Image 1: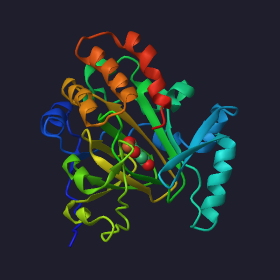
Image 2: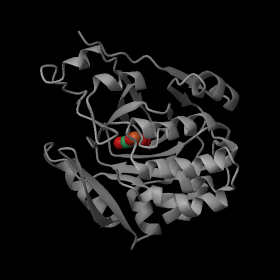
Image 3: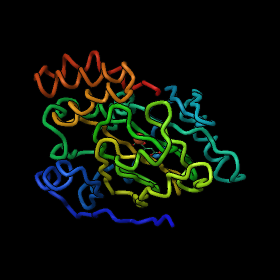
Length: 293
Ligand SMILES: O=C(O)CCC(=O)C(=O)O
Ligand SMILES: [Fe+2]
């Protein structure tokens, strides 16, 4: 019988050095607490606050429907109205999910709300204008991101600002039991796995963790994740490579990685290995931040 564990380390005030030696090098996920709780974001950020700063900004939200992604555009006000209706209404229909939005580039005033930033958890190359790499996830309770891994096979630092999220993780060796399609998506629904249709899934080892406001979740490259919001939520992540992971990412061309992804990994390899400055690379890389795949 498939058992679900919650077996990942939770580390209080982990140093950057320990983070790299104990987790990044060993490809182990970890939740880090006690590092970012002084950020103003925890008391300031809400849809209304974003709306007051950028009333005319058009954001996009996604519908994940039967393996396809559809996009809709909203102002913050329109999106807030939809989420409020959702919170009062029926559970059945899931509202659109604002997903992978580079909000710090769109509203630069809010960068100061996440200071001091945790640059000790990133390779130095990313320090220059690090906020440009942050992608936001803003959604209703019950929002769902189906099972996938991150498309460039990057490391992921995930920051939870408000609301709680339940992550179901699988280490990358479990991908073989989860029925992959379209490069990075998986047919398994870890909340109701269909073992008759997908029998190999019984070999997988799901790890379920709850990520609370103030937590940072680290996912190594290729970690599968299925994410269920328990509450209305604001989170953001940074996808980033090391010299090691970018080479692994480039090698994935032999495993079916789409050429467009290989191109972005090539740019990051020029930065991280050949040391081309971020000012140059970012001009070409920035379209990645609006890439839906
Ligand atoms: O928070 C979510 O719903 C999805 C997060 C995710 O997939 C990521 O950070 O890569
Ligand atoms: Fe992801």
